[in-house]
Image (tube, rainbow, N blue to C red):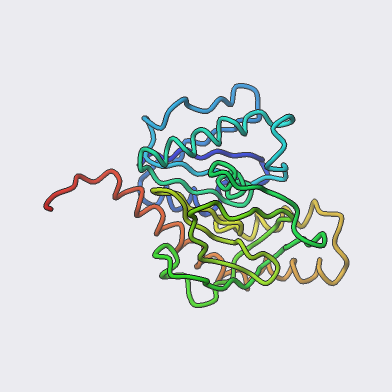
Length: 238
């Protein structure tokens, strides 16, 4: 299993995703498109799946981040080849863009941070093992319109569009299914816009109560990797 992993920010690494790929004996080919020499491959031919991770960039800011154009192109190309695509946070916003939808700030200046209770809005096989109301990490102030033809399957109180499926083999998660306590703690440490109560709440989220989020995130990632693996398996029968 050879997965192309696009790292948009060094403080938003692959986390649980890299761990789950390694546990299967696969390889995460991590690329840093905003860094010198971080060019992305021209086609999906050498990879079995594509992951686009998060970052603090605005997903619509092509002028400052010209590498977004290649990410949008690759998302469409992988999906056209029926090779699974996974967009996380900024990656989900870029996936929505790749399918023609707009990205914008959340209403009222909302900022969703820490562990957040999600709710299912429609059946989705990727979510089958994640529980009835999974707790997952979030850290974002932007959201996106749902692309035409997309199926919404996950929401939260602050953000209606948390998880969607589109095209032949593409999934977007606004929440951070790949997050670990260390990743969430890093965002907390560098944030200056939190009051004392919210800082204390998120600090507690980085402790033992993160365990259900790690379990749910790992389950979702494994279900997506199952689809990557199936893409490599020979088809038999009718």
